[in-house]
Image 1 (cartoon, rainbow, N blue to C red):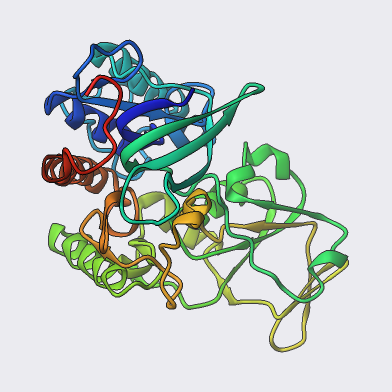
Image 2 (image 1 turned 180 degrees about the horizontal axis):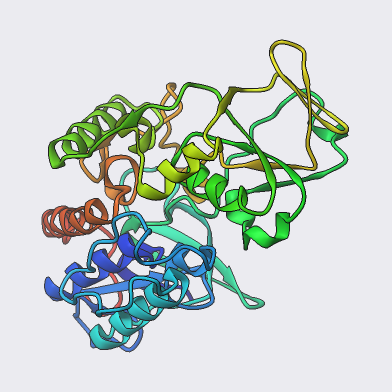
Length: 375
């Protein structure tokens, strides 16, 4: 027999925990063991433990250098040493948060498909199909809040000759420590925050070359209005059904004291993107061969939404047209941590907004939709 819940939250990172918090505030209770007639929710998470993508960050990413982590709603982050590793601090914070609020996250389970419960696609219940630890199940839901982020879907560009390269290729998601590159020639690809941070780090133990498709845009400072303007630009894209750009692609990069020191060492000498890859290196637009042992792709991530494919949400433009957190025209489906809500403070606000809209939707459809057990 399938489980049943009014709302299924998929993912327990910052956005998913925010949604669960606001569901609890609006009177929803965990579906497992809920009393008859209760409004229920279920949080499904693919990770082995709390922390979301923070469980996978490299140990050298310290709390002093992590990029703007906002408190989860209702409970502040603990005071920690600035040099504490984020991979230790943030998963522990998320775990304490889940336990203190009794959010009852179910893990590790990976949602494989979300599809219509009926055959007419008339806006009834949704089936959330999951797998985990040798078992599988299905949840009948009246609405879903998707908070799966991007970490599980790294983007690897395709370049001519890539399959011939005899060295190592890895993505940001694979990075563990700079020492793994000691004494090697490393091509660092990408112009985002992670790219420049890891370029600086690896440059202390390896010979680095930095490649980007566009000239990086450096800023002397970053004001709150700059962030608001960047988020608005991303929001405009998703309203039009276009794939979201990262906020940093709009905001540019700040030269921190660490990066200024790297610039003085010549590390930030950016090269235009190479045109092809050969067994022992990469070839520049001018035809020069740059010998490298490692190609380190810091080329970003894409939204992990493959499990929503059966709902046919994408537009001809390749994105998903959004109305705030709600998929346009689909009040049962909300995406948080997507597009303009990809920042941690944006994810908190999106969790609240999604819950408010779902509450209104459920109130308007009670009696018309298939009711959950006990109703």
